[in-house]
Length: 117
Ligand SMILES: [Zn+2]
Image (cartoon, rainbow, N blue to C red; front, side, top):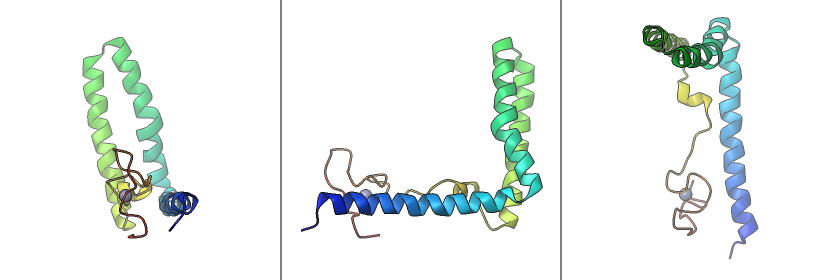
């Protein structure tokens, strides 16, 4: 019988591995200057501008910013594509959707994905 500690360690290792891959992909993408700039726009500048426009009730500006966000996302995707990556490669992948790699299903039971992948 496998102990609880071994089980938990298995899922911890699985998470660390997924994070390592995502980090490596992200670092690779960030080496691209254009990607770095667009990524900053998307995650720092645009959310700030959008929040500001929302507070000001500036619907027109919000629409423009939403368009801009779409444009930036499309451009980011095309840069990533050239590196054989997608935006999903930049975040840790969840292997088991049933337990979300916690080892426990929603009803608190042990998930059957243990050591299956
Ligand atoms: Zn599972």
